[in-house]
Length: 115
Image 1 (cartoon, rainbow, N blue to C red):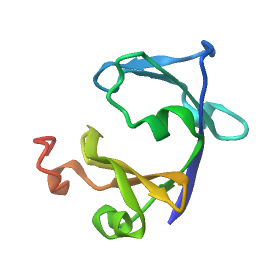
Image 2: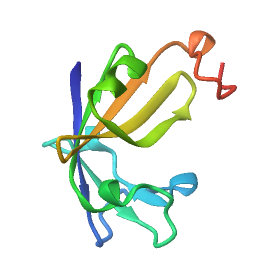
Image 3: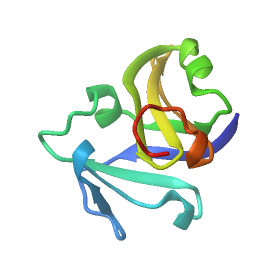
Image 4: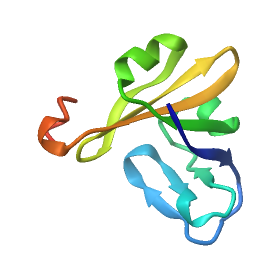
């Protein structure tokens, strides 16, 4: 498991925010932040779980998303934000955790049609 970023919900616009329409959220690029913070501003009709919308989260890259999901209560089912990538959110003892798995697109196996 490798740390990726720290996600922080906000109601303010932040420089560099981009809209992810399907999730109803504006996000910043954590790799451009010196502290690896990903700012998230949710639209009122965002389908994301309220825990994700209101609580900070830690994000980790994992080798096996399905196995990692067993470590907590799934609050956002796995989805594919792009080719070869799957991610989901869990509630781990009251903390929001984002888990991401990245594999070559040809062997993604997520059923999303990205391969």
